Amino acid sequence: MHHSCMDLDALILHLLEASPITDQGDLLVRLAAQGHELTQSTLSRRLKRLGVQKVQGHYRRVEASAQLLPEVTITEVPPNLLVLRTAPGFAQALGLSLDAEPVPGLMGTLAGDDTVFVAVLPERLAEVKAHLTRVSAAR
Image 1: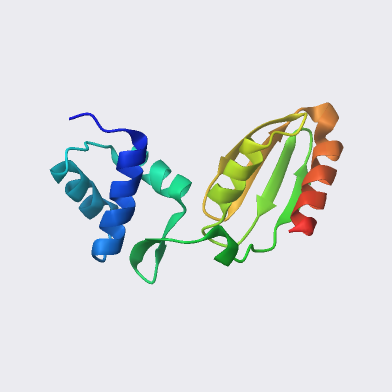
Image 2: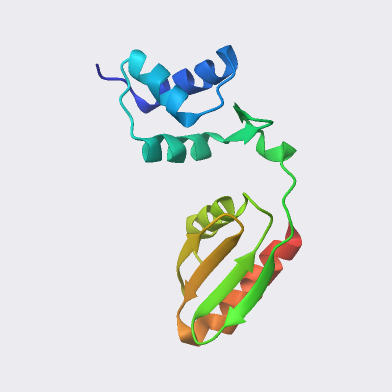
């Protein structure tokens, strides 16, 4: 059965509103019953894009304006690495936002739970750090 992305997004949001879902595996089973076969990693990425987070044990959509952005500390690790530390659970969103608006010299990010490693061209390390410091202070 073929469905567009919008149909799948709407279905995911509908399922999350219709009943409490505490596990991505449960959501995958419910989606499969509706004709949508997804891998767990694909579902996880889609949930992030939709702004869905686990809140008090249940998955639900969280409005961006309702989110308080935590403090970010930036440590320079020469010759070409910046380490960004943030609150638990925010590193992947931070990494995605950095990748979405690339800065000259920023080559890529790798995010865990509360830490983002930012690979930078060595000659641009100070410049990228200054930019990220300004951006994180402006939030």
